[in-house]
Length: 217
Image: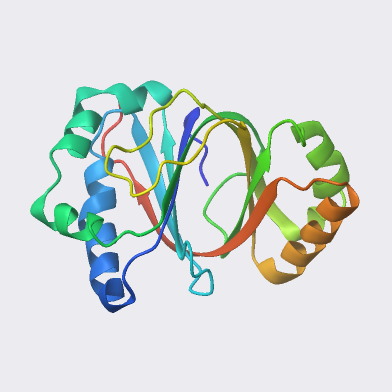
């Protein structure tokens, strides 16, 4: 993660297993590059975990700020999808979208690591200070970089999404880059249990692609 902007757009989704190859061709070849033509979109990262049957794909966009999602260019992409995008949208059974304001990150952000731990936790249950003190300090040798982002619950859901996720509980997104995810994933799950944090998900994803905008805005 480069952390060039203040806004974070996180997306989880599935696709029909029979369309997996076409999904990747579309998503990496058309969809993500199309999003990076929007003024304010800076970087994008694609991840996959085939063992996650609900959300096998995770995409992370870095934005200059959250106003990027209010630009005419972005709204036009949502309301006027390409024929290929229209086709692929029909095959999403599960999709999650969390829009966040970046609040803190490690100073050593750079090229993506092999794996990303995506922690979604109720903001009231965990603060960045506690996570750094109890988790990051303890496992510092295993962590390449980290980032905290706070959900903006006022952002509207995608109009075409199959399910609208409830936003009654504000979430904090914790992104932890590692080279070997499995040990840390197990250790963090155990630690969260010991800290009596029960409103969280911890997902592991493997890095696929990185995209950078070709234009400075």
